[in-house]
Image (spheres, rainbow, N blue to C red):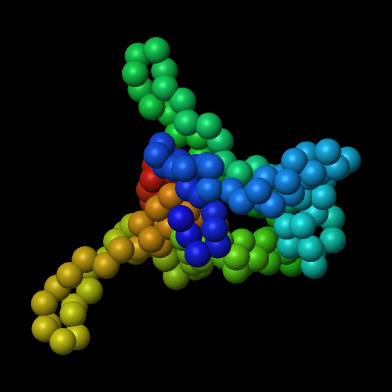
Length: 168
């Protein structure tokens, strides 16, 4: 469990009975409210007007999908990946930064100064011992969380392909 009292839904052994009676009442009350989906979507970056489709997409990403297992026994992840594309100054970075403000295991990075190797791991020299060590990159730090990569288009094409493979 995180410090926010949330439950990792991807954990097969998560105890969903940890909701307090008050929380269960709140959830039951929310289910009855009209336009709940739109109200939740509009609560994403409330300072940005419009962009309902982007807000709905982010909301669905936050709730996550359902993991599946095929008849052949292959596991399919239910993670939702989002790519926000638009003209300059259309609040794309604001969406990414907002998500990083309230979620645990969320990492924000800029594609302008990132490479695929740096996003996965990097080799650093330990300042105390002088030995080399591997340091986790943004994708590893956001494992089972969200990695927000701003200015993805500024990355080298080879690095973009490597990121796509990591997302699969």
